[in-house]
Image (tube, rainbow, N blue to C red):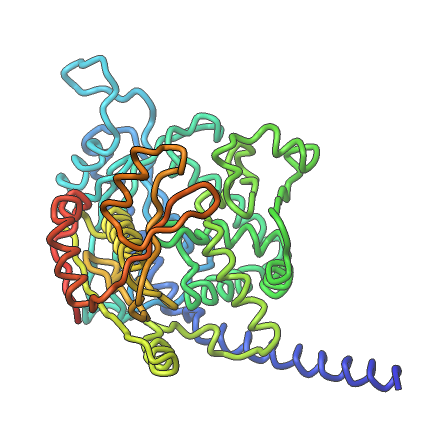
Length: 457
């Protein structure tokens, strides 16, 4: 009987493995750009790179350009909107012609080049300003997708230790991944699958409103585990903090924990950057996002399906079903910010989401909540909730007699527990009343968060 059971399990696993292989093959054909499309993207990037390089030369600014990101590494996946990276590397200590002693900000140098090239751009503020150039749909192009070029200024450095900004390491990152994929060409396809999976599961992006996997981190992880399937198998059933040092830049696990900066050890996965041992390539990954990713991996391995590669825009239908099943209310809010679209706007909107969530929980039992950022300046907030009949208010410790006396005057139904006074307060407020009061009482704080509008849908 035991032998028969083992035979059935083996047959079941073989069937599941074949199904996974088939799903991977189908998904790769959907997310991998064709040769013509890839060539077109490369041609467009090279053309713009050439224009920028020529203008820099004419202005006698010491700089060279290179195409970066997943396009250069051969790990780019199909998108409705392509974000292509062009890095402009500047020599250190460049001075103005007038003989100013200080080094000019390389973002300003790059802006001078773009102006001289008569290129229309949008400046994006950050730790170092960079620029976006949009190349919309055109008849002469072989791709119907919108294309945005991110033009990023970086310093030309010899070693990673000289980096003044994370983007200065980009040249080393590209070189490392290209070396890995040259050694094992199949890894490029495996990386594309990892990106498609994480994108669909809402775990792709190191931005503060996502706190997920950057493209480079996923490339490193797939290279480390020598494939996407091995990667998700390890992730799905992992326990405790994961520490990865592919190039053995440290002696052992303990050596990493001792030598890496404490702030870089807070993430659930410590991924030592093989190009720079002092950097955790997954420092921005949150425990919440990683747990969501682990669950997605485990669910896929348990029941393989192509749906795990399909983006679920809001999950609104499942929230509606949950609200109906629990006889609860589905609340949908839209909020906007005047801050710069991208990481800044997303962070402000997420901060507001956490704030209003904490206030809602004072009056309602919340079974589900969801934050959906539009990538522009708006977000939608979803809550499945039920009105509380009462709430417990925490008062002062019992040994603070005057404070306890004042608390009892303010609240009727008081009781003591574990050395502290508490009060039961009946609640009779619907969400519309709460929301109106919330906006009125917190108007200044909402404004300070950069929120310009918030209304129910």
